[in-house]
Length: 264
Image (tube, rainbow, N blue to C red; front, side):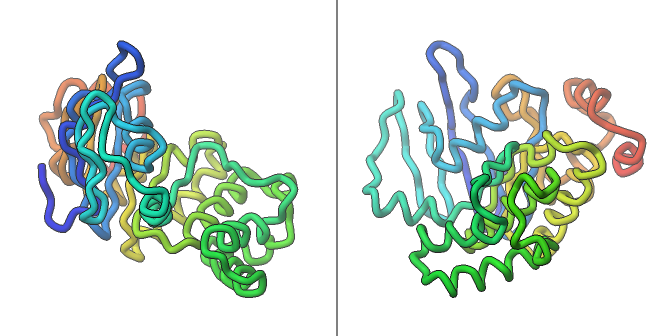
């Protein structure tokens, strides 16, 4: 399904690790200024797809287009080489938040956010720290700016990671299971920050098993299984009854009572 004004499109995207084909001719579009959620069972290729979009993995075949700029096409793992300068520009326009927080333990929350601005944007320390404080405020952590990661909860550390990515003003935000390492109480605070980003109209692609969040926030859903796109479309279409048998099987193990109400 092709969408108008896509932030990202993938065409014929294939990724192999040795003889294992993790992605099999993926075609999908993520609309600009909206939230696209990738769902599916473990091992379905969601994180690999996200890493290809983030330019952290090189596809074996196919093309990815980000904000109108094509990456690829690749054939047998070989594609047009990007100059280091062009790659840096494109990569700087993509913010990525992983399952693990990946914060520097020797830096405070302020330092973790400001460092990216100093090294990537080359901002003076004072300006970088002022912007960092502003971003920490947006995720509700201005009062924790002087705390080190070891002094923060898991949810707070993940919110620092989100602030760090947002500080670079990316055109596209990618989230790879950002709550998978958090307990239920801390999951909510991270999802609330992401809901705020969605309300601000930031282009987002989110890999998540939080079906309640997906059903309430996503404008577009892509359901993958065994490296293929099985279903894609707005939530009301993807979750409509009667459902695809494979989606029904997946939802039986990933939907709690609250989420089930959203899927009625």
